[in-house]
Image (cartoon, rainbow, N blue to C red):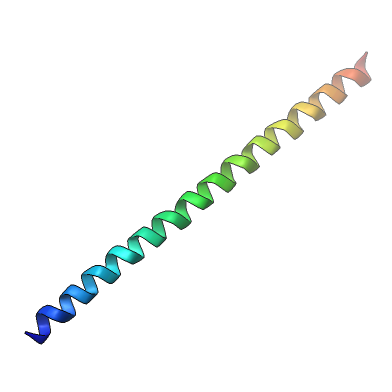
Length: 55
């Protein structure tokens, strides 16, 4: 009987932990996407400055 209760507690904890992990990974993904966009913007700005100097 005790073993079943412990297994149920562990299963619910695992589910909660999985959900938290998914939330953290989603947040990392969102931040990574924002950083990638910023890097692309900076690269484009540098290229435009380079073209302006050449003219």
